[in-house]
Length: 154
Figure (tube, one colour):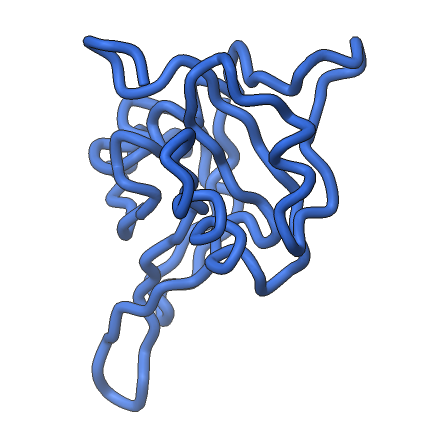
């Protein structure tokens, strides 16, 4: 990996659903890359108590952080990988723009997204903690009994 930065390039692989951990482990066995898949920590109500459980945020997707030297063809050979996602220009599949920003935020959180806390501003909300901190949106639906809200981000 480059000195002063933990990774140079980020790619996203599409794999068999339910095999995200196995694919990440296979990629992590080599020293050329570090793979993580997004996990969301959700609060669910079990009888009368709230419990936190881990669920896959993006089933079938694994993010791979590496030097630019790692080739997409090498990732495609990993067992249970269906393909390396690419942009339409038949590139090497290196993420850029908002995709890269999301991948960088995911890296900073170790792949785990906690329960999001929001401050309501009329019909508008601003995320004040977690991965999506400082993003704004509007509440689309709420379930007060389950303590969840569906938010459409700008």
